[in-house]
Length: 63
View 1 (tube, one colour):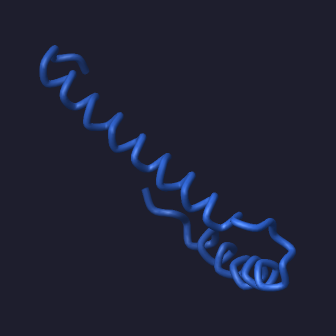
View 2 (tube, rainbow, N blue to C red):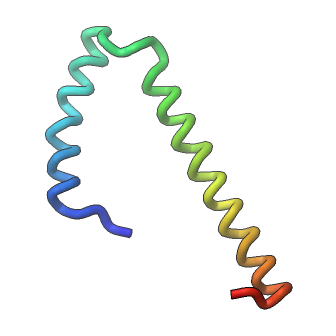
View 3 (cartoon, rainbow, N blue to C red):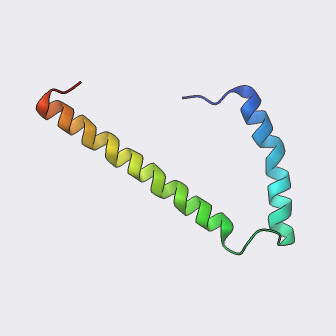
């Protein structure tokens, strides 16, 4: 699913502010690593769920 153009522009404007806050020390230590770790965990969970659903749908013919 593609993100709308206005949403990407809004996020692009927000990124420098977040980087400045991170550079100044306003964000907690390890916050960027924690967010990236959570995103990787969520992505792997979605991939595992998708593969499992394809296998079970192939075996049992569920739609």
